[in-house]
Amino acid sequence: MVAYALSILAAGGVVVLAALLFRKVRRAEDDRDPGGPSAGHAGSMLSALFLLVFAIAIIVPWTTADAARQNTHAESQAAINAYWAAAALPPDDARQVRSALRDYITFVVRDEWPLMAQGHMDPVGAARMDALRGRVSALKVSGTDQEDAKTDLLAHLGAVSSARAQRAADAAATPPDGLLLLTILTGLVVLVFPFMAGARPRGLTLLPLLAMGGLLGFGVYLTWDISHAFDGPLAVGPEPFQAALQEFARIGGSM
Image (cartoon, rainbow, N blue to C red; front, side, top):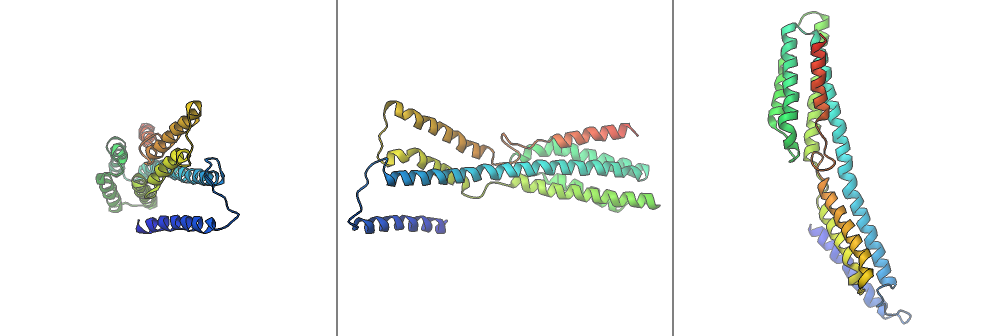
């Protein structure tokens, strides 16, 4: 933060120094016009800076939510694959594994998803998955088919655990520090810049400024509202896991 403050002061110092030096140039003229070259150049650069910061504040959460959505599909599909692989295990073991998978997915949908909107996961879910993997690793199987099924099942459970870890990272992900604050500050500067430049709009000339202010306010609020992948208008939902539960029921009914 100190480095940022020093960089701002240094840039301001450059402006002051340039103003003092160029005052001594005979060809230079005072520029007091709100629509003059100084105000026009500064206004264009401030608008460009706001658009750059605003674009980053939109794109970062958007890409995070998109990646989180794809990851939830990968996790649920790995759980479905594990459910299928369990079929080749001894009947009692297969029932236990499938029951544990149903319980895990139900827990994710019912208990864990609301917590992810707050940016964290429930450690009980990770404990359940670790317990299931340990139980499968300890299974006593016989024959090539059961050995292959156990190997495949462990691979699918490993994929579930990896996707779960990524889901935890997605739930905790937020835009870079200071980005939302910078979006607000640049938006405010763009709003008040005409007045800072000396313009005094009256009557109908205020309408474009009011429209711009409303749209800027909405845009800044939007950058805050979509800052979490599992909350807000871009929130990733548990639909893939709900579909997995339906698939479990279908697989169980077809056997």
